[in-house]
Image (cartoon, rainbow, N blue to C red; front, side):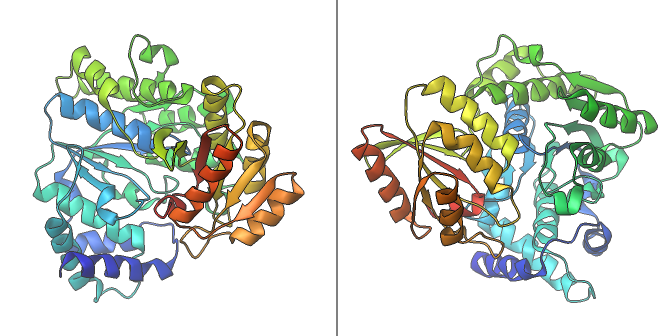
Length: 403
């Protein structure tokens, strides 16, 4: 199997949808010889911040000269973006070889694996083959029944639980506390947990789960990030950095040797695409962010208010149908009332015309465009005509790959 065939195989599994549970991934990995059993993991769960905190923690480990795998989701353009070793995507040949092996086992499975089950199994296989000393593992969705939660307690260095809010409520629960209980399922008996400082009701749920599992809980207070220059922009990234720093210091009690200089250098140099990332496009400043739920958009809005206090922003956005896009639109409305609506490249997408109708009802001036570079050209032209020179592109990551 070559790389293009591997990509087509993964995309072909997308029609199987989302199926929480560990039965298929356990079956598949067992047939593969359980590559995850040869690895040590830092398992990250939460509603927001997993990619950013994971990138910081991976960078810290790399600065300390540990060969580090980083599995994240979803990818923007190519599935290899989800599999990083020392900050670089795995080779297309290695990835294709791992997916090819999965395909050979998959034919014998009555209950076929989903897209993320295949991608997760491929990540474990690639990281094992390359001899990664540590793997930063981002939960795909949830925790207890998440595909990544197949790892055994002996292979877990620490669990990390970040900000928890309302997202994926169909699968995880309709309150933040219910979602917290589900995400706390990544806690393993006797293994430490790092907990992002947040609402007491949510922290109490996680601490209760940690107590049941005899797991020591380390709260990542914001002060843990004091004195560090964090290259990722926004107040919320300081909070993500606090979790990464707390976890990194915890590793020094697990056989690792990570210095304060390693942490300092990593946080100052870390890069994570499409997280409050500024690019100059079409003669205009463009702020890209993958915020796709109300809490994420609230953090984005806070950054814009702080960094561009007198700017009327032009937005370019697209969402999946099952997201709370009405709440997100209400959050950004005070910052700008012009929006270009697109349809993300996903079967669950909200069509641009439907989004436009909602935007108009909320008081926006809304246009539609194909989810393509032309959408950004249109948004930039509007911003330049207004002499504001700032476009904010946010929403589904399935939109970002095309604009």
